[in-house]
Image (cartoon, rainbow over the protein chains, first blue to last red):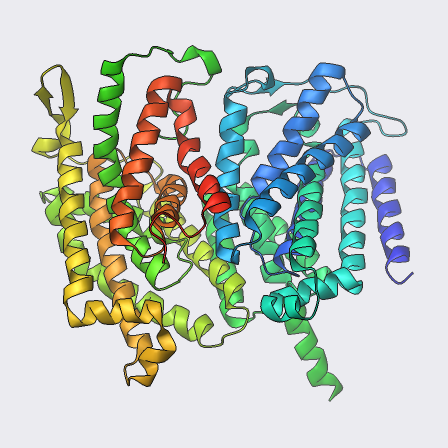
Length: 311
Length: 305
């Protein structure tokens, strides 16, 4: 209840804002911020709890986006089904990648996920039905009532997905799955010896994380009414998904949320006012700084600070 | 060859096959393969021998290419420029490893995730630093061997590939000799095989690793010079080379120098054949597909320990 009441209130507030506020830009920017909350939370399930670094966020995200776009083009599937299908397909990619490479040490999995991005992008570039390298123009259907614009509807939808993703991460954190994953992160041999089904848990986390990333990507074609490979499989998604939990704190489900809110807000400010290069530079510097100085992230800093006060 | 080359559609590429073309593709692939081996050899030391998850290595290499470009502006020959940069990169590499050691390896637990994230951040900083300094435009160097080509019967081989391949072979031979014949070289191999044992023998593994990492980074300077000789260079080029270099190192079997050459050749020839059969848009997937295949089937590589 401590989690669900504030979340429902937030979602209700977002819906109310979408119905009242006229200016679309706010929702346009807010959608991206919420999307990064989902991506960072998804990344943290495998990267934060189990300690397996995934550089392949764009592969899962892009596969989800393309699944949705192709299904829309072929059958004009409604958005809800597009998201489900995208989650299923990206989850399947997670299963294949996980079974093939999660047996190996973490660095090999990290490299394999970089490979995944390029392979996915190459496949899509060479797939003419999905628009190839030039991309695909899509016509948005009319927004569902009570919303008067599609962007506002997507904003609320992404808000609901963000809450769902965080709830899932929170459940994992408290359950035996999360305990198993943390045991893997601390010492895989010890976990294996104590009877933790390490490979199965890792693959499960990989599938779940991939499915969430795919779901986060699914509304993207509708959001832009356009999709093309270079920006869909962009490394920036990997940077955001990895840096947010690292900066916010990987140990707690709120860590990725705080990190994503912080980084996306910086991004909105800096990219719009100064330049997108500077934004990447700031993320890089923050990432190195936090990883070296504050390994537990912002959540860790706050905890340390509270302990000091209570003493 | 590069990502983003215009050749978007599946069947647009000519599907002509003949043994002459295949022969040409293999010759070209061998030269390309020597080049790939040369750009991977630094990583083969840093990741293969020292076990440092150095995903920023290609970014260091690209900064070497930019250093070469700057020096070439003052009239340096590109290869000479690369050699001139080596001491500077050596010092940078030693400093980088020292920092990594103090911040992660020394603290022990959970160094894996943070180490990878750290080098990823370093790669981002280098990439954006290059953009801020020199812009996003592609850069090339001038030299007598960059533009011209030599005819062998019916086939024309661009001279820059011969130079690249030649330098690659010299570099590999030097490093192989260094690692097997000199005292420090053997110490580096020893630290890779059994670090605690080395510590018991009274040697300081951290100092040796620092030295080796310096060498790996110095090699990256020369690789960068080769990079800009072979083709134009832009700050984001490191992203493609992460896949190429890591796939060569993993395919080789971690830390094997002969393996690095063999793996480079395998990658070069397969890329070249795919390029001929299916067109440029499929080529980037070759290295990564090969990498996934190796990881799935034979993770210890061809010449693995």
